[in-house]
Image 1 (cartoon, rainbow, N blue to C red):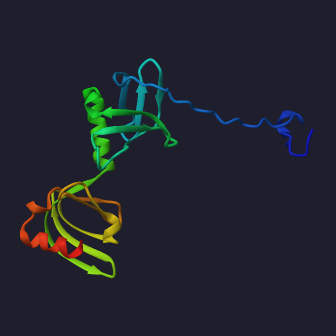
Image 2: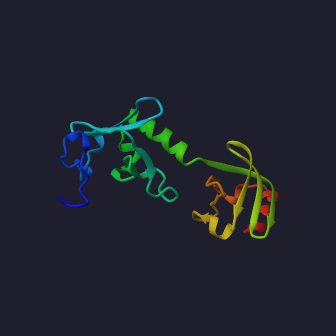
Image 3: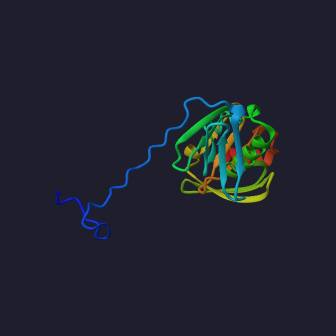
Length: 186
């Protein structure tokens, strides 16, 4: 017996068994029609691939949240490893689609900015007061150059210090005062 082998006092001097990690392999190809996503209990998201396997804890994430929000939806296991990806949301059955949509809305909370009440800039940090689709919000953006993303044309997405997203779908549709505030910061 080597020095590194521990003796188990409850096993009459026999070496203590070493636990072996379980390797989890995910299926290479998953038929979207066989995916079933549900909550059981209500706060735990689970995934079953019919006639194959089940996952007791999963996450639903977007692979391309800005450029393709309704495409390339990834299902991750409890270790954040990809189980499978769905190319289009419309491929899912209605019940699974409902759960996926709720999960994505919860994970990617985005408020659409309707008008800007004020913006204050101090040392590279901007303080915003805006009216959004979710009500009036105040948020802080550090280094706008890094946390502003142009999504084509006049669409702007700001990510605040807490990771919240504020979408300006078309800057030209804002009132002139709001446009002036945005132009001051950008």
